[in-house]
Image: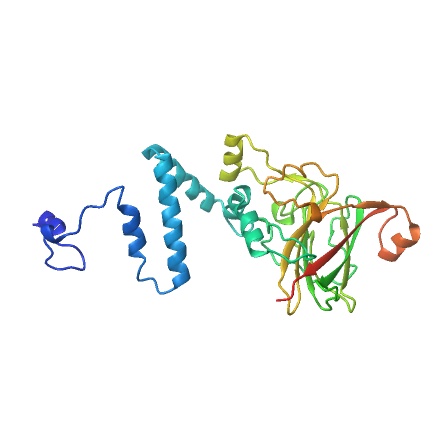
Length: 308
């Protein structure tokens, strides 16, 4: 009786017999059936996203015809990716980065007008709140490495300085590690700072010249890179998020000119407009003015925002 009920009665349609049931789902009809199942989704954008993703995912499966073992391995990979995530590690962001999805999304969402700073990926290490710091403060709490001063302006595309803009900064050390990668070695917030521009839209801070580094390879993303013969390295860089009232925020980097891997960034983020000289400076008066040891390195960057 139980088996007959399961076969002859469909949940939600009491009394339906086998003759009244719709045709069997096949490889030719399953995609349309899944898409149709989203018809009652109240949010039209969610319905569109689910429908498009379903069609493209099913198309990939049809093209690849994975074996059951391959399908099982794919699910295990995604499960392991989720299990690797925690409060200071975002393996799914890393996966998005190495597949170029992060770069694509940033580019699609920042089709900037001429003169605006180009956007690039957020990366997996913007996981903790940057401490608020005063202009001229150091973000290097270790006191190691080559002294560096970063100066810059936040402007609108028309050249207007943006007073009171926020500039969120984070970077690796001269050894290529972020604070969240070395608890107990680096104090929380090392290499990070949240600054507010002055009346002329200026900001400046002290730091060290960051090093190039490998993205984390001790998880599923590292296994993926090893299996495809790809390198894990990123060129040396400093991250920025600049935001100002009445303007569209920009997430970007500056890359250290001459750094290794500018032509082979593991996350596809390098743009020529974002490469900056970290120029050597031998000027005792300037070093005293900035509060650093002479000689030092200096980088300058304009962060140009679009109104919107």
